[in-house]
Length: 414
Image (cartoon, rainbow, N blue to C red):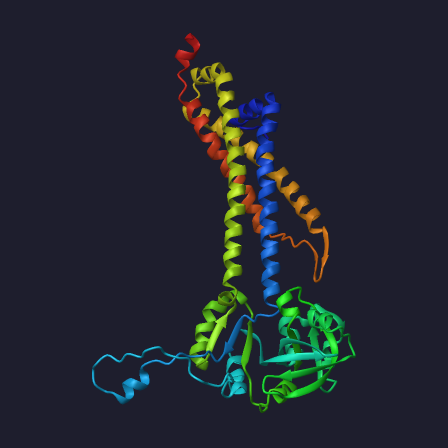
């Protein structure tokens, strides 16, 4: 197939200046490969830390929030229109338990967005073994549902979590608790609640989330045994944990659940605000670095095309003298910029993918994080190619415009 004459001229100019074309393409290639690598690293680590946050945090947590005294009681007793002022308000004394928790669970299960839901009873306790005491907290759960929602099994480093349903007065403890008290699977541990109740429990498993604050304090037990430990009946539940089919919808669904249940519904975004802010800061930093790299590559293309125009000034004048309009000259140099962008872009995609793949195989061996988390998100590759090509088009526009305005008479006479 015969190429358009403008295309043939553009390719001729590129092939006649191989070194400069290669240098310009390398700039684009480096920028795009770094774009892919950094975006893959950023998304991979963000996804990993989001997943890690969900090992302990549900998409939505429903609980009884402590309330501060307000003026509604004053208003009900003093009906005059004067302003009611409450000086130094205090928190109201109230139970942390939810009223009719299992009725709430049945109601929430009807929501089509809900993927999993489970009750939990939490309490502060003191672990004792061999005269050594440490403080912590115990979570009474349905371990099967807990595992389905939060993949507890992936954090197990010893024992079997399902033994929690098979062994009476059994407990799963964090690796930090086990290490501080020199405990192993099969050992006994004394657990004392805040109200003075004390029970000896058998360790059936040890877990490690790699979050020190969790591993040093937390334990799991059967929900009925924790209710008994803290002196509550079987209807006592301190919170309900809800996972959605799409966790990104949690900020939209949580207000609906709050209105429906009458209790505080905290979504995972609010519970991890610092993490989300850190993600945004990292994104700004990485995108700024990538932008600077591609900007430098764009300046390189601009300089090369500018030099080409000065060196090819007579050829441009001859083309215009032969009847080539300014648009055709612009097309010739714009095509050169596009070809440089495409050549550098395609090679950059391959190098970016290869670099990402190699880094993803770096072994870390740190708890559940065995390898450096990298993402192979396909839209990043399209974004990188488009970003690279648009950068080269922008860089090539001004030299091409300058070339289209060359006066052939002036050049030929000079």
